[in-house]
Length: 285
Image (cartoon, rainbow, N blue to C red; front, top):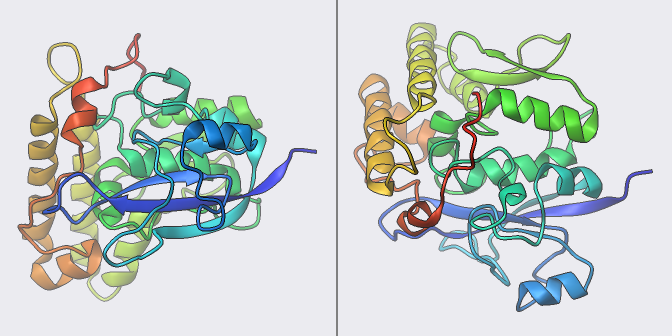
């Protein structure tokens, strides 16, 4: 029987104080009870820390969330460790990237943390995600729940768990991953948008079409070779978010994205993007 543990999701403020975004990561322990000071301490204790494209943090905490706790849920430890290698820096260890191969292109820390937390799916309920993190509605609008490498993610889940997932177009726009034989499931962003715009079906349809275009555009290969700069990625993301603001109007934008229209959004950490290289060979999306 696979070992079951509680997996914990955490947050700290991201790199830019101007940006309403949190960095997220996952542990197999409650860092409020066991605030290990180093990754070596975590390893000695037989615990797991998933960097999720960030640094090691003994504890979390944000201006609106003193502990930084985003949730906990029982999960399959072996599956989590197969999906994303624990106790290893994503910048230097390919297996610690899950299928967020290229930081800021395939996704950011939110999507990688969600890949670890996929191991909390129990068959009857949805897996835990970092949906309570600041900036999550913005990142999931562009990158989805598990990143833009849909085909690679489905293959990873199949290899680690035996579950067959298929990547296919959601309705009426955007990419989702749904279990074979089931209807196309709404991802978190689509569900949130559907609830908010329940009385405005035309605007909802326009938003989801726009999101489909956004994700298809974001998934296109970048010209040239190597990692795109954080400046280029953030400018691209800002433009895509601003397009949603134009479509929704200020009130709906605030409710859906938990951010002010026109606010500077820095989803991609310049320091990480500067040191993160894409893993060869390029993976199909």
